[in-house]
Image (cartoon, rainbow, N blue to C red; front, side, top):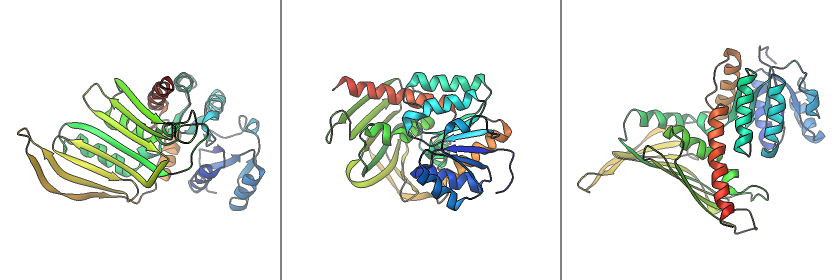
Length: 319
């Protein structure tokens, strides 16, 4: 493994954690992998024999590593990230940062107090198409932005603990806040508990922002087709980002001040094939080296958790 001034201990080698193992290793920074499951450690050891394997997080905090990455179930994020920050480690934690806004705020403050970096895995913010869309909007190509619409739908794996909003919608809320650049002034949400009591399988989230933009998310694991799409409606045109096809289409369509339809056709203006996880983790390593603020830092992650928590409270109030 190539030498690097940054060394990372990764906690969690499950399905998604293995992707982090692969990327951190090839970035030359993976020093150790921690997991309570001996079978998972065995599989990691077969592919990466020079990486230290541990079955307890207690062995991590005093290790000569500068950073800790956390890819464990969401309910464990707060406690693990807090311990790592208190040990003086830079921290990368998969989304969401925490399940309560107060916990997320505490972690963000703790990182500042200990001069540690805290970065959250809001992966789609590192998707080149999302960066391209944000720049395209900022250049005024669509004029005034009216609304954003996200669809994250599939006949997917139903969860028994978290609802579809927490399970599927974290990335989309992060995109809304990033593109709009504001916190919402109003949150509305509806959800249906079709498969089991207390867990919404199908959720519609509606955000309105101080600047006049509206954002809408439909998240469901009870849907016949796999659909991952962002639509941006502007005064002078519309964009559609197909996350599966990795294309952005510019629809040069609008309705003018005379309420007349304007249609100047459409064109695919972006095609992507980059690996957002590699981009994301490379960014984390560079921030660690240069002591720079991560793009998806603790503060921005707090805002995401605040929206999700508020929406969840509204759903609970309707039960």
